[in-house]
Image (cartoon, rainbow, N blue to C red; front, side, top):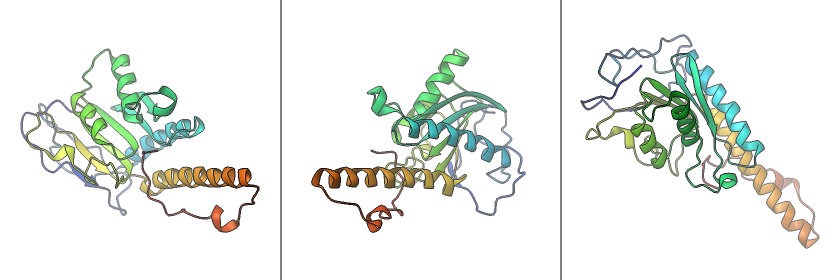
Length: 224
């Protein structure tokens, strides 16, 4: 879908409109550029389909006791690789879902450059992942929940909006945002409930319904 651009792109980050049309066509890209030649609705049913696959990958992270973030690397309609967040289990601070998917995809395609590929991830990428995405020459990033703590697609900084960079990845945010955010909020709420229950058990106390319902509105973040 995309090759490295030699000219600055328009503002890179787009937030999905809640009223987006379900059957919008994928972005058309002119040869030799990374900017769409026309701008249809930013989100399509295809985007939602691949984001649901990223959500499934996030559940693998949850099952491993990690913050549930998942990513899917796609070329055309082919899934090249998937990845999930696992820095704790891997003893690796760089083992975010995006990094795992990029590494697996590079091995599959036998190329450290991944032009024409799109990356779907359930949480807005951080600065580390944004850098790797640009080095890999990813054409397009689609993410679910915004991350107001470490998001590098506009929530905290916008790494993709810098016109001086030699590659310009287009970004769409907010795809299945509620579902992706709910998965993160429920994970952190459950972890806090378990921590409180463990402290009370150690002190010989019992839990209350008020404590079990606390923090349901917490903001999602990939940080632990």
